[in-house]
Image (cartoon, rainbow, N blue to C red; front, top):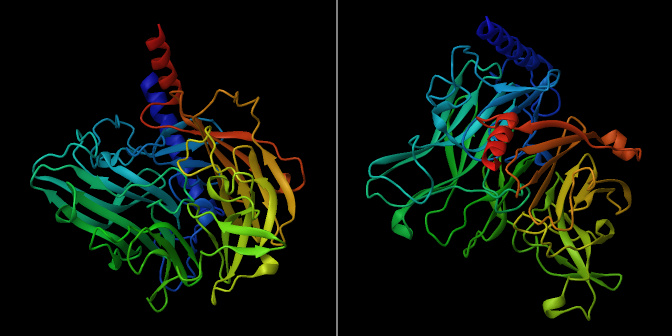
Length: 482
């Protein structure tokens, strides 16, 4: 009897997930055909304020997640009304332990690069490896490594293969190296895919062992979602070339960074209409300039913000006397505006803030510092370990929301905090984790309207859970303590 009730509850919750398909808003808004869109439609662009590993996949009834923050797949649906998460699998008899093709939630034990909600479906990019494969440092002979793009149904009914990006056999039992990203999603080293105007743009790599001989393929692939057709638009055919990272799509362009020693070094952009490539290194970045007696210097390790006619580059300021090892230590956060067509620096739109430049912050787990930048709806959000601050394009701060350290129990002794921000459905989301604790990522939300009116307050939204629920994880921790 109890088992029957549980099955009914699972079915009911999955029915809510299916109903939400017609009510999507903002983050991957559906155009009414369950993801089977046509070229005639004006397909949505990339949302740089909400993509990467921690993209918010929200519907009116709940949220979807692809893992607990790690890379092993576990598709879940978090129901807003009940406050519970369930496996995204509509088979009541499924135990979700087989990790086979029969379970959408744990499909083939994929190693997920990232997942995105787009046009009524969840697109999942993942590596297909043996179930017992333990990591990148122990290959096995004849092991096939496959990177593919899949489309997961929002009601838990199916996982469809869209396209194979790359496949190779490890015939010599060598170390396996794959595409990897970083947890700060606006960083230019992030190799996660985006979706822009009906196409997925996917950085990829497979390498066995070290050196050029082991490189089986790397570059940037474009996939037409409606057909699965693939097209390689950039190839890393030598170790000197960089792997594309920090992808962002806006208008006719897809921008990416190449950490290369060659002609493609720095920021590049691909024109999606005429399929041409342009390197921006000659003007995007790179020299300091002086405004009102203050020197502006780019923060190289943080991605710019792109619009159709502007590129806003993160920067910091310093005085003439502030040079050498101390340069920037007493500086302020700034933004340098470029004309996206000519590369001209727009002095009237470049500004210095009152926020200190946190070049080094021992509390941050993000490997590249404490500052992040987001452009959304005509405004610029700058976030640090204290909170998120909103500026108009003239450089005036008009709103902020701080991290409630007392409520989150953050002390001066905490050294491994993770904080990231996304914007979805006109709400600001905070992804938060104390990494020294064995726990789940916590997701908080606040309407932008409340923040702009000066009364923004964080409220809990959901946890990112994997095969173990938060309750089960806490139970295991308690048993270990005892």
